[in-house]
Every structure is written in C-alpha cells, then in structure tokens.
Image 1 (tube, rainbow, N blue to C red):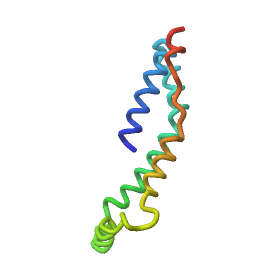
Image 2 (spheres, one colour):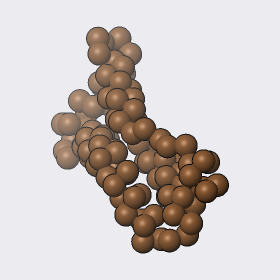
Image 3 (tube, one colour):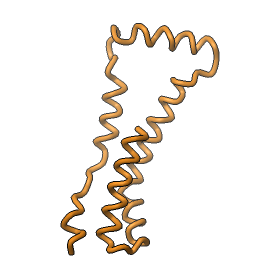
Image 4 (cartoon, rainbow, N blue to C red):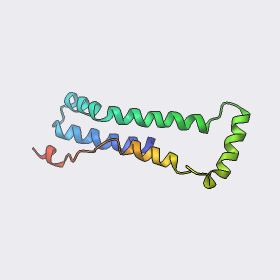
Length: 102
C-alpha cells in the first residue's frame, strides 16, 4: 500500500497546489481533507501486513513459513488482494485539469 499511497498523495497534492494557484495553505488543507481517510486505511493495512511479515516468535515464524507454501491451495487465498483493492477504491481522484486552468 505504500507505493500506491505515495503516488496518489503526489497526484492529489500537485493537483491541489495547482487548483489553489500556489496558495499552499489552501492546498494543504484540501489535501488533508481529501487524503485523510484513504491514508488511514492504507496505514491499517500496513500494520496488519507487518504483523504477519515480522513474526514475534519462532513458532509463529515456522507457521507462517508453512502457510506460505500451502496458501495457493487454500480457500480465501485472494483475500489480501481483495482487501487491498477495497482500500484502494476508497478514494475518488479528482480531475484537476479544469480547476488549474481557471
């Protein structure tokens, strides 16, 4: 989720700066309003993934290692990508071209 968040954030910030004609105070406020919920969702997803990729003990590391080998054969194997897609779709990107021309 980090790369997607970075790209979306850059697009929204650049768009808001252009739309605000360089008034960074206005642009930053609009950016914050537009990005807050999406960023929080991405961070929650990252926290969940971090707990799985950095196991707290040897037993959990062994279990996760074995799980990775059988995961392609289990039901729900695409659950993580479905969750990520749901979070990614949680933001509607604006078309800044018209607002920037005014």
